[in-house]
Length: 321
Image (cartoon, rainbow, N blue to C red; front, side, top):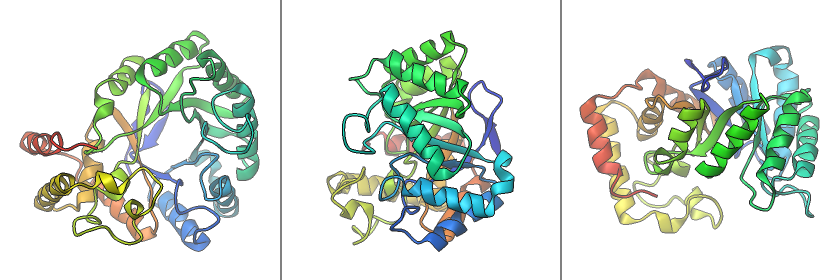
């Protein structure tokens, strides 16, 4: 595993991080979840990314992760970077959603209790909440750090202008924002316009979620829609309507380039992101140890020739999600 400094901080993150959004909840295979976490650590993945509502049901990913860590990796706590977030609906009523101080403070206490941890390494505001003054959300993050409940603060899914305001507010109180977590992939290039330049200017790291476009940047959809795939479900980021003939044609062409590079499409897609100097780490979501190892294989070749990059640009800018 290789590591990279997060923005202008001294914290180094592994190029590959493991996300627990799917496949680590109460409804999932606990044995396989344990194997994936332990294998990830053995492979040098030191960063594990959670949120209060990960499951299903909400909270169960944190609960399972805490039990696994405390059973198997308790004595390695200082070798781990564990992050969690709050911002999306977690419990009923007006205090279980959004960016209020009430919600963030209650949520981190609940998350620490579920994971049986004394602190998180990174705690995020999971989304911008227009109904809460930004100053209130930011102050809660600052106080969470000062209280020792988290070592670093981060934000996720914020529009660029609000992110810049948040960075300025934090810096003014000498608790800098460490990291921004956002969607980014070969098929979703919107961050390149505003948020990534804003992060670079502020010295904030960028960690990517959905790097494989919810599985679209794999060989899964090249020959139709698998019955149990995310696109076949009524909910989720990847909708059936997005998988147009043009998008499949784009993915197929990328797959041919990946073959020339002796990589799978998934490996090339991850490598392309890691080739970006602005990207600190990429969060992968896996359902098995073999899938995890396949994703890590991308590190064997993260370099692209100028010609390859030109080809990728010509392919992907035509049909983006």
